[in-house]
Length: 206
Ligand code: ADP
Ligand code: TYD
Image 1 (cartoon, helix red, strand yellow):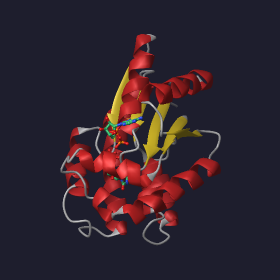
Image 2 (cartoon, protein in one colour; image 1 turned 135 degrees about the vertical axis):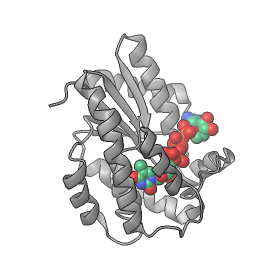
Image 3 (cartoon, protein in one colour; image 1 turned 180 degrees about the horizontal axis):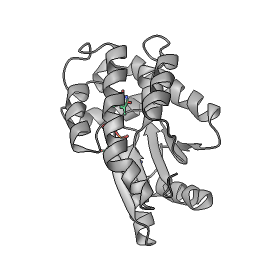
Image 4 (cartoon, protein in one colour; image 1 turned 60 degrees about the vertical axis):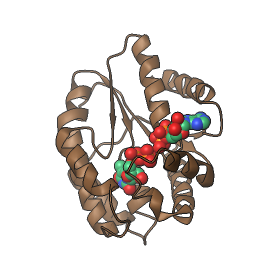
């Protein structure tokens, strides 16, 4: 079994996950930990190619079912090439999104596909993070932060505010369903204040 620690960041688009993942990586590296900072969809060359199919283009481009297959394919590549090797050598892996995103984005927002998501996860991925930070924030505020970036990767942001409200509820439900690994973090604060809380929780769980 793996020796390193696997930490994930989750939440709606623009909630500050990437910022906090970076800050936690810097904090742990400063303490001498070997940290691999990665992201989904992506995190390995093949998975990054699949990412482009998912985050660019028309919101109606894929059905929820097709998305589940593409995200899971990208995750399997990420797991094989990046996550598993790093955990096996004892590194701490910090991933900006992982399977909880599929559970919420594809599993709950466009009909109830959660069972399909869970079955595919069990067959193809089979691991859960040791620790997950779910950054909670108001979808309208997060959306304006996210779209202000104009990254060209706005396919999910383009699904609109109502979609983001459903996502927020989905993440909250997930946090209460898996309290042993999930911490809900208030994202409406200064980045350093949020990072301070996250660092404390990560130290406590170590
Ligand atoms: P995500 O990865 O969840 O999409 P990011 O970390 O990329 O979010 O942040 C989205 C935008 O909001 C970025 O421009 C970032 O600089 C800004 N941002 C991140 N955290 C905060 C915060 N706590 N307060 C205000 N702005 C923030
Ligand atoms: P990301 O780059 O994290 O976007 P953001 O920084 O805006 O939060 O993720 C790209 C998009 O992919 C994002 O809108 C969420 C979506 N996504 C899913 O729908 N399912 C998944 O399993 C994953 C990992 C991401």
